[in-house]
Image 1: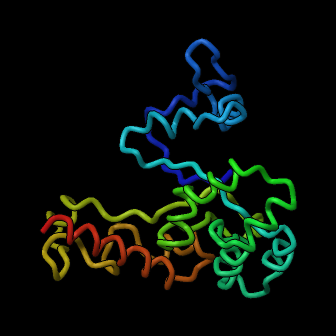
Image 2: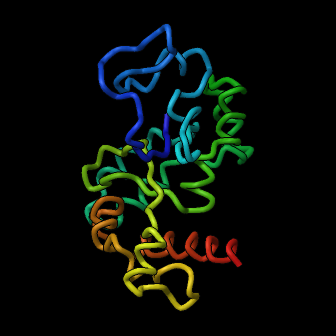
Length: 202
């Protein structure tokens, strides 16, 4: 099941067992007992900044090999997006029902925050697509802390957030992590929500 992640230093990851008394996983086992019971993971439910989301993505299993066989590494991100199916498409719904996927799973996919962030809004990016493992953990590239940017005199033209190209974490570094070195998707996503953030502060 895909999810968006950011690890907080207070996450309970010291030991390798599921603590039934507290209901928390002491080492990430994706809280499989909770998932199997239809509940979200503890980290998704209790995350301090609500920065961790969990959701269902429908995908075309026949397209996986084609996506993983892409020769140019910089095309892997786009090929991975093409594997995922639109859960609101009537043809996809019809085929999913024929394939035995319960209606509750289809409805969960239609409401999935991961689908919205990765596919609709195009904010989330996969980790190391060049490994060709088609990871199901997606990340939203971070913005620089605003105070450190202000102290360094790197505020952008809007005077609130630094320009994407002058972020504390270099765009090329993020691209190497999330898009096999292709800086265009990282820059586009970061500019999108940096612009949204600056509009919200006005």
